Length: 285
Image (cartoon, rainbow, N blue to C red; front, side):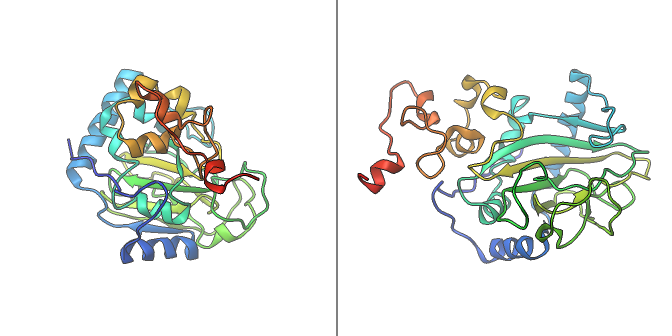
């Protein structure tokens, strides 16, 4: 197993390298960016092998709707299935970019695999925050990443993007728009603002396109996958502190998500720990 990397970033601050700042700036400008060679090939191969294992053990089959794909295999809630996936949300070359697009209080929205099989048609164009009832453009609420477990090519279903569309109103779902393919080598990561218009591509090749969708949302937005019910507390106890925060066991800005003035992560501990809420920081009103 590849050694787990952590961001090393405290939950209340971001130390941004020049490289990270450049990627964040590209996402802000174009709506997306590609981090080349973000993770090693041996980890990509290990992830692919484990996704094949899960497909077999869970009996995964394609869906019957055009959004998920009738020739696409998806496995949700990956953190619950194997410790291998714990390193993905906190990967050192990716999480700081997400924190720069959103803020360090961001949460894991969902962690799933998307395997586009030969013969799949293009997914309808959409934005990932289309169900959030706020006018656009607005500050980023969602920041999503796609990990290339195999090469992404236009032929095998590379993600299709509409550059700059994160600054426009929502698209007509499934509308016909000019797109560019996010072609990238195995081991690269595509990062995009959730408001960007995009879709999975059609697979005209004879091989599967393996990807892992590591999706984040702002700390004040409800997560797409319910992490608190989807992950058993005993499992979360084994997570590093930063991963506990990312799945929702932290408190956003000293207030949102507390339980009786406690961080949910503190309730996992054997003894009650002192905790400071925003009211203690601002004084009496």
